[in-house]
Length: 119
Image (cartoon, rainbow, N blue to C red):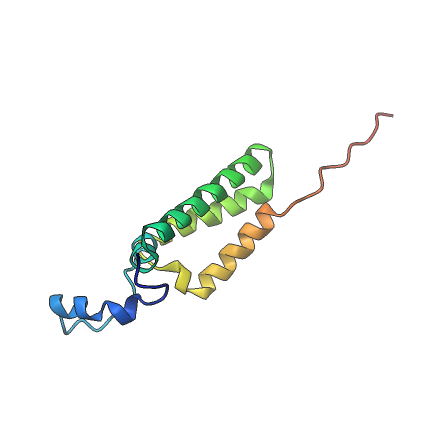
């Protein structure tokens, strides 16, 4: 069980004080997976990982089918995965709005291309 979503800065100050009371930045763990584990527990982390894998599989299928927009969505998801190792991206709305927009566009249902009868 975690400490509650968004509660990391409030709860973890005592732990920072034991290591270095003069350290002024008391925000997040600066790793999305670690923050998610601390705040939501193992089930929250598993949900995050399931969402990441499901998104990657859906994007991979679209890329293999030749969907050019899915390439952009995959690039956005890959960039997020890299950035998430040193930053808590869920709390940065500027990052998350752009990511969710890119994923929504790349995974939105689209009509199949029209097939024209041969002349």
